[in-house]
Image (tube, rainbow, N blue to C red; front, top):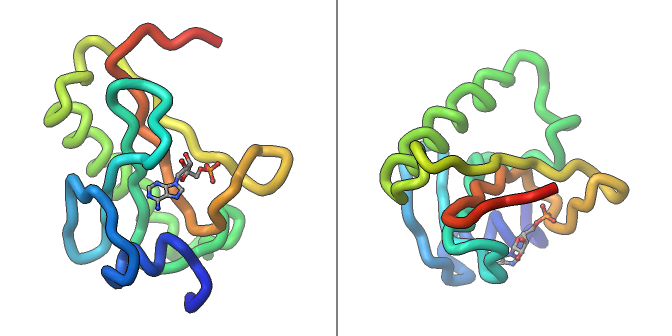
Length: 111
Ligand code: AMP
């Protein structure tokens, strides 16, 4: 999508601190981290929200969790613990309309 920030990161038009990439997924550090580890994991294919992923393509959610699991190991939060969250639409707090999961850890998270 032309005007999508995360599509621009996928295409390399906007720089990001990339920590993982494969054919279908990209992960990079959040520009405004809420914890020592704060990564964003995205499918390269544009879906505005989780609501927009067709049922026939839902396997990307399982796949994205495979990437999350690996990154939790790589960033040494798998055992100490971490939080995964995806904000959906306005009341869910979504700001960037390209599906992404936050992986947050490295400190005690409350609430
Ligand atoms: P959300 O509220 O779930 O849509 O979160 C969007 C996230 O993207 C926020 O945590 C932002 O800090 C993060 N963000 C925005 N622009 C960038 C960028 N250029 N590089 C990395 N992270 C970004």
